[in-house]
Amino acid sequence: MFLLPLVASTSFSRSGCFGFFPDADGIPRSRNNTSLSSSSRGRQRRLELRLQPSSTSPPVGHRHGQQQQHHGSMGAARAGNGSDGIATNLPEADDYCLTARDIRCVVLDIEGTTTPIPFVTDVLFPYARSNVRAYLVDTYRTRQTMDDVAFLRAQIDKDLADGVPSAVLVPPPSAPEEEVIDALVANVEAMIDADRKLPALKQLQGRIWRLGFDGGEIQGVVYDDVAEALARWHGTGTVRSYIYSSGSREAQRLIFGNTEAHGDLRRYLSAFFDTSVGGKREPRSYYEIWQTLGVDSPSQILFLTDVYQEATAARDAGFEVLISIRPGNAPLPEDHGFQTITSFAQISV
Ligand SMILES: [Mg+2]
Image (cartoon, rainbow, N blue to C red; front, side):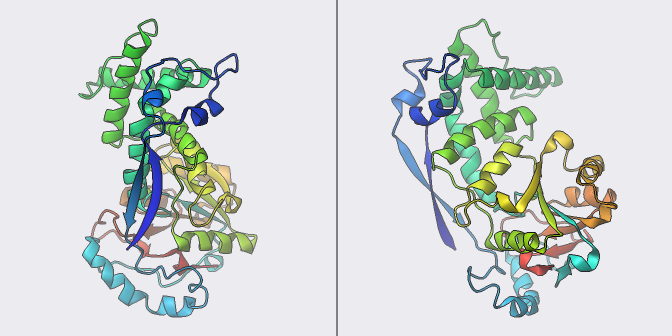
């Protein structure tokens, strides 16, 4: 086990917030003199994210020299995952060779594949939840936030029409600002708590996270073997790498552009896809990605994910698929039938 210290603020520092969202006249100012950002400025708490290292991820600096040995010991390493509640006796790829299979594009899920799930659930989500009120107070009248709120209102209206129990009616824009923000915050908190994959929520979360990343309060977490594989694949000159995540593209760029251990990894990534191309459990989404990537056949695209339903959708669209087994991931069906990996070191070029 290792500790990843991350500093997360319970509110935004005003300078950081206004640095990105000045008023229409360009002069940063608070909309509410009693805003949370003012009252709690400087109050920070330190989050320590405890993460279980991958059982097949040796320390950086040892992996390249031990790659053959690493592959050879995979069976033993794989057996250890049973203690994490992950189904055993699954077909695992000893070595998945990209060039042997004519793979030209690798599309990566984030949560549970390139990045530990606890980073999202224990760091990113709480950060957005803790800061949403201060963010809305500080930026309420900016054009960007007005657009984000309109997007959010449309989702809340749909939720109310659909009878979503946690949905709270938002007063009209003409109502006092505090009342509107109170209702928006209640809805956003409920959406985060339910881990809903809503574009309006993801967009707002991305805005809030940007301030955390830009201020150095949050840093992205990407497995060592992922960072090394991205560099290795990029070095071939023939394999391009992409991200496809339910998180907004802005959030994706933040995570990969500001990693704690590897710096900016975006130089290895050719594009980012989010659910604007469709849901991750829908084969049509993968068809759309294939059309965008432009390779002759969907079988020239390898998709990596930790979620069985996403793997099935990609396979149905003709993609090659590997399922990522990482500590903390949800168990897979015993008979899922996909090849699995526990480290990107198992994918050779
Ligand atoms: Mg995932």
